[in-house]
Amino acid sequence: MLQEAITHTLDTLPVPSRSDEYVTLDDYKLWSMMQNDDTNEWFENLVNRNHIRKVFKSTDESEQRKLDRMIEKLDEEHIWYWRDDLETNWYEQEMDKEVMLIDKDGELNLLSNRSKIIEDLEPFNVNRLYVKPSDRGKVNKIKKDVVK
Image (cartoon, helix red, strand yellow):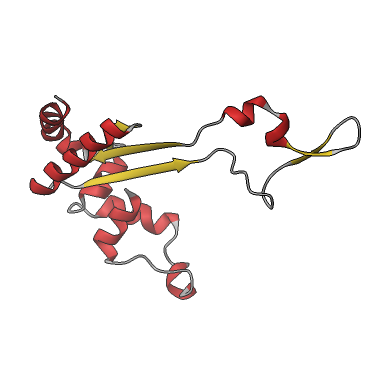
């Protein structure tokens, strides 16, 4: 939300390589911008703690198809959304990254070979969809049609 609010006002965020511009964008300046810009919906939502809302979460393939249909509908209705995709493999078994153990006999072993917990960890995907608070009602109606 903060990035959307700033780019709405400044068009682009100052980049760290342009230090003269970057250091001028401190907390005080941002707070002043938020307090004084009545036209920026993002600032208003931040100041009032009216943050974007999660409206959908998918963790499996069937839910993913529903999420894709929701996004199609939001695009058709020109509704802003933010999609948060998380893919995690808890413990990647690559030799240069893997944790090694020395057992009681002094032998070197891979943690994944010695731990049932590590062996049972499964990769997973989680996708979340967020919308502006002002669009939540419209999006919930779309969601009812999509989730059927």
